[in-house]
Length: 462
Ligand code: OOG
Ligand code: NI
Image (cartoon, rainbow, N blue to C red; front, side, top):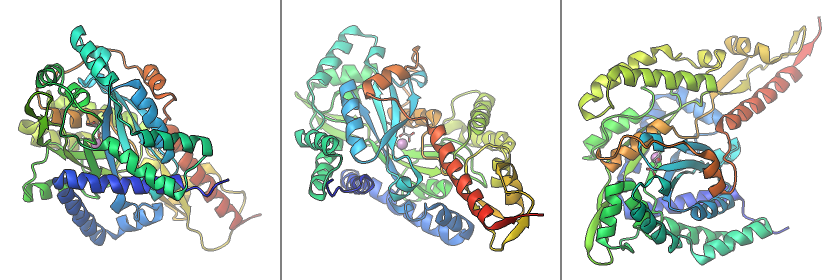
């Protein structure tokens, strides 16, 4: 066996290099990181409970390097090779997101680490979308797009060779890993030259802006990189103070005592100069985004979330936007009163996932060993501490809102099409993992350990 660099470390290095590259490409992203760091620092110094919580769950150290990115791919083969490359970094496809129903002709997954230790070592995730060319109605344009995509190679030769080496050897040594990271970075780089004519760009753009963003470029430039904040409302107001205009609505649940799932906000995409084969033009794609993460929900909790979000939107009667932002926020807050807002209630009603930590310092005598049925009572009596398992994934409604906000309001409202997970998985070359199963496993593992420790610490007798 060789002396391989651990995948977690390759991922951490890649994430860092990606962030450095993007800061150079989009200086505003650097400003955003500064703002987020300031807000996180202030929040932690004012909220010791939150600080203790993050310490206990192992998230405190990962916070300053936590971010997600997003890319959009053009062909099945690109997705297939992207999966192999991410696997070298210990990132696996989790979840299936169908965006077609929201008017975006892609379907997606999130590549990320899956076990708790790996996530805490480096939580880097990439929301990865695949263009669904079959949704382009104009046959001629579809064929043109197909031809352009067929002739591009988004990976360097070395990136693919090192990936193959990893697959054969079962790892990469330090030198190979360093080469791998810098070769793979090339795929995500912004290109100022587009290999098509301005007219074709325009035709693709008129069909859907996203299609132009994918087909008109040599590679899937990273289109945003999102740092994690502990207080998104503070960042939202801080952005305006720094002259950055955020989108009107924070996507996701309202502000709460116990944050759930994911809240996100972004600032509008930049207009950038592009050199087409025949003339100069511009393209708007890359933007900034911030996220705040909360506890992962069980299927029951997720159902309640979806139901309440739907109710709020129906109540509003139209899509949330700048003109009705305040009204929407009020409705959202009112509607979400029906979602319990203490961690104890969320655990007791099986709405969210938690870590369980034994707190008993003294040996006790009891009639029978503790079991799962006792857990909530143990929490209520202070013998067990619960801490939220953070949500590591994305939300389709929010993602659609993020896509739309930087595509402009001229997009179509929906595609009539079937969501097609089987087809996506065929392109990917593997199944996507089920995120619910992953959270349930992490919780189960924690419960098992907790009960074992409690029971070795107590004497069963009469
Ligand atoms: C991806 C949009 C989804 C998020 O945070 O929900 C996303 C994209 O614009 O390519 O990144
Ligand atoms: Ni995002």
